[in-house]
Length: 241
Ligand SMILES: Nc1ncnc2c1ncn2[C@@H]1O[C@H](COP(=O)(O)OP(=O)(O)OP(=O)(O)O)[C@@H](O)[C@H]1O
Image 1 (cartoon, helix red, strand yellow):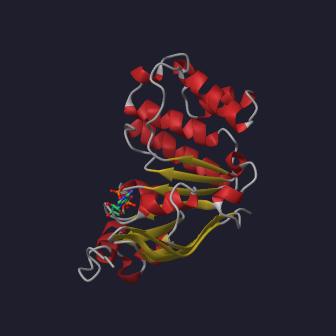
Image 2 (cartoon, helix red, strand yellow):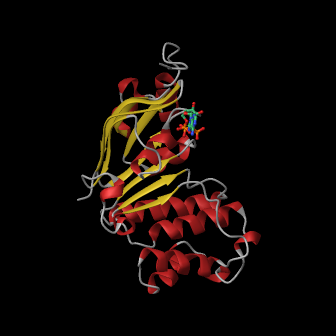
């Protein structure tokens, strides 16, 4: 079982405290990572992936910081912004190069293209892809190493309703395979249909970590009402040093 754990995690960018003393553990299943714009979600995910250095605290995957994972791509796959693809390269080439650089078998390329439904367009240049197709390609790259942990920042961005339904199925399949999936989203109705647990951040602080039922049960409110209650505390607004 591969866990993700964050302990007393803090990140300051100059005068801005983006993440403040955050703590949570994520186990297998789909965990929704929610919060308003600027809550600190992306910064937290980037610290887990070793892309941002914490000011204090730890962000561990399978008990280690990302930099200390051996064969990191086989442990964790990530989708951050689906940008940075070479526009002149085909999806298949992009994935083949990524696989080669990561020491992963070339046979994975066809498999992940199938998994994300891009096989028919794999020979096309990425420069001509729609946003939804880029998201699928980003997901394919995240899946290349067949990782136990997936960290996905807004994977539904740009997907049409059929794409969203497909993504929901993919996330549920990954969870059914015993994987640990963290997915940030602003689309609460989508989250409510997909996740087992939720973490809610607001102004850099973790306001809730638990099951969807625990979040919505008090007063039997819906996810949106519970979310708005947790993220409208004016005393936390602009939480800064
Ligand atoms: N590299 C940086 N330099 C300075 N400030 C930053 C940097 N990255 C993030 N921040 C600030 O940290 C805070 C948290 O940003 P972050 O991107 O983590 O939020 P988020 O919850 O992912 O927001 P969104 O939902 O809008 O993507 C914001 O105030 C943001 O401006």
